[in-house]
Length: 235
Image 1 (cartoon, one colour):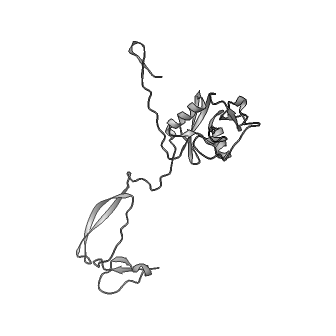
Image 2: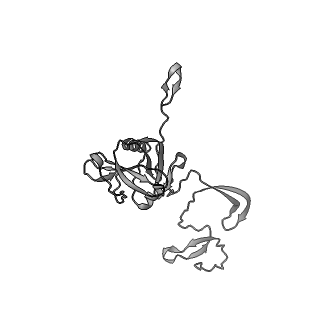
Image 3: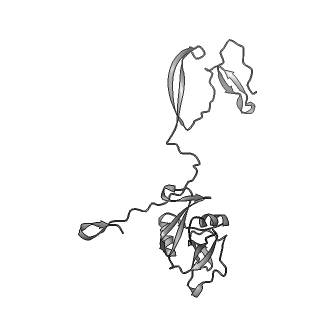
């Protein structure tokens, strides 16, 4: 629709040009004419396979007839890569975060938090009922990242997330005997959950959280401990 009609003069016009920024129309022109130009690059490699050559009178030279074989550059990363979770090491995706359940060896709240920090994350901070439902479906009663703020009072998440969602059980938090400064999420057999303040020294399962796209820290193997008769054991 925007092509200027082909000329009928004796000069061959086998190349195209754009007629200025104001017009934006296309025109055929002699390939030997000198014009400004613009380049375009693709995220591909190009291998040219020459299959023939012909003489072209408009440029007074032989022109190669080629087949372009294209391969996507494996070394070129996407401009906006999609963040993912390290599923190989047990991290599962939900929303914009990754979650990793820790069960089997129960720990205190402080020890559980330290374990998550060593992985590059934090104890889970729950900001919506949808997120809590997801977390509840994947663990039994466990520590979450909520605890009493020793400086400002009230409760805060260990990763600094503002407290925007709570799900306290009936009569909770009650700070029984003045010693309950950490929070567990209690799960039930029917899939519901509620929060309870608990002594931080109690031992529970826990769940870690890390932002999608952030690479978790893979802990190194523990050093061998010399045993009897020169045999080495792992702790």
